[in-house]
Image (cartoon, rainbow, N blue to C red; front, side):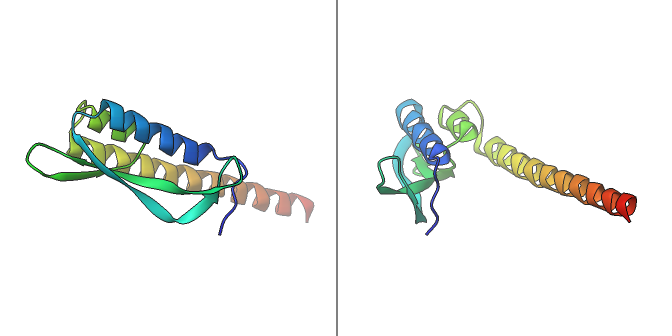
Length: 117
C-alpha cells in the first residue's frame, strides 16, 4: 500500500470524472478504478479512478482517462482517434523530458567528478 500525503492526483481524477459525467454527449456507463488504494484527506482510503467508460448511440464503448483530453472527447470536441493520439503524444513527451533531465544530471555529475578529481 502506498501512502500519499497530498491527494492532488486523486482529487483531479474525481473532478474530471464529475465534469465528464455532467458534460458528456455520450452515455456515462461507469468508472474503472485501480486496485491500489490511496490515503484520503480524512484518513479514509478511496480508489483512484483510472478510466471512465462512455457509450455512443451505437453501443460502442470508449475508455478515456479522466483528464482534459478525456473531457474534450466526452464533449465531442475531438474524435477518439485524436484523443488516443494526444494521449500518446503526452506520454512520449513525458518520457522524453524524463530522459533529458536524467541526461542533464548525469552530465552534471560527470563534470563534477572530473572537476574534483
